[in-house]
Image (cartoon, one colour):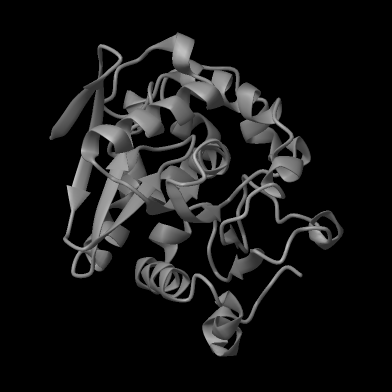
Length: 262
């Protein structure tokens, strides 16, 4: 287990591989651990970092920091301490939103953003997640029987502070995510699982005004955790996005990435 002290509190993280850095930010239902298959797959060419947000996994539980601003600050201090100068960010759910606001606050530190299962508006949230009101093991409460299909989530699910989910969800929905997304200048890829039961596919009309730097993709056959539903395909997607960061349209010719929302 690796850990650093940020603002007098413990932050747990893990790092694998060597090469170009990649930063992984987890979502509301999980911890750093569900990134492991992807991190292992990319270890030969990248140094992959994944941390636990406050209130998740083995990081300290500090309710005053359970909001988007608190998590953006946590990420900024984390990359400073680890000496990560500029990196692509791969975020999921909560991590995707934190990635958006980190890139807005620190445009010189975020090279590009792959945002998975991002609720661009409150209407994108399934009722089971939007109405979660707290309790032990939020993943078990929200996912129910689906949790058994995701061992990497289930292993640490009970460590999550339910209030971290409640307060960060509330904070995320207080943001104008869709509007703020359009202020980003770095390459952005929005990825949605085709059958995600928690984050609905955004309506094409909702995305009509997005800038040329923002692309969208439906990960076919995947639910809320594309990185676990098809780990090798998800790792290939990251490789392609990183390699073609300034010419993402070149990937349109690849059959596996043809399905787009718009």
